[in-house]
Amino acid sequence: MIITSAKPLEEILSMLKDEDNIFVIGCNVCAAKLKTGGEPEVLEMCRKLEERGKHVVGWCLPTAACSIRSFDSLAEKNEKINDASCVIVMGCGSGVSAVASVVDLPVYGSNNTLSLGGSSGGKLLSDQCVMCGDCTISQYGGLCPKAQCPKALLNGPCGGAVDGMCEVNREKNCVWALIYERLKKINRLDLLYVTHAPQEHGFK
Image (tube, rainbow, N blue to C red; front, side):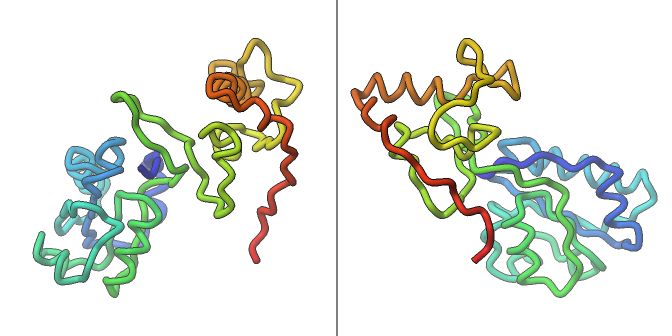
C-alpha cells in the first residue's frame, strides 16, 4: 500500500491557477483506504474546486490510478474527460505518472507520496518501506530501519532514544527497540553484530 497525504487546498489551487475545465481522477485502492482519493474525497475535491471558481467537467474512480490502460478506459468511466483542459489525480505519484502517460493534457497530483506501507490486523502500518532498491530488511527481523528510523540508522539506535521511544518523536517506538525485541524473539540476536555500510542515496 502506498501511503499518501492530501496536499493543502491552497497548494492545489496554486498549481491550478491558470487551469480550468478540470477532470478529477481518484484511486479506489490505496488512496481510498487512506481517505485521500476515494469517492467521498473525489466528490469533496470537486465541490471545493467549484466553490473556489474552478469548473469541474467530471470525475471518475478507476480501480487503481497506477494501472490505467488507456485514455479510452478513462473515457469509458466518464466521457466528460474529453471536455477537460487538465486532470488532477488523487492518488500516489505512480498514479499521476500512469495517467500522464495516457492523456495529452496537463496532469496534477493532489497528494504527497510518503512511503510504502501496509495493513495488519485491521491496523494501517505506515513507513514500512522506502523502496530503496537495496533491501536488507531480513537482517533486521523484518523491520526496516531505513523507513522507520527518522535518522535511517543501520547499526543501532542513536543516543537520544529513551525507554524505547524515538528521540525525534517521543510518541513513537524506537524501531531499534522493536528490532531488538523481534530478533530476540526469533533467536537471531547474532544479526545485531553485523555491521552495515552507509547507504548511498545519490542517483547513479
